[in-house]
Image (cartoon, rainbow, N blue to C red; front, side):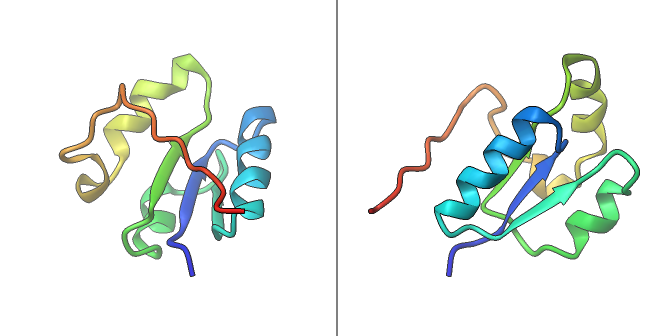
Length: 86
């Protein structure tokens, strides 16, 4: 079984990414505006990916509240492409 994917922001882009990850067999945990990010992420041990699918104005404030184990040693400019093995 694949590791979990956390998607922060379930607007138009978040929904599209979620469907894609689900089709690839990744369990997806959505994080909505009304949810406490730290609570959700603490329940998910070491997700494969945390995807910020949010507006530009909300991007940097969300980076500030990510738990340390998710934000340390990460390059926010890099993009990993997940390919289907099918």
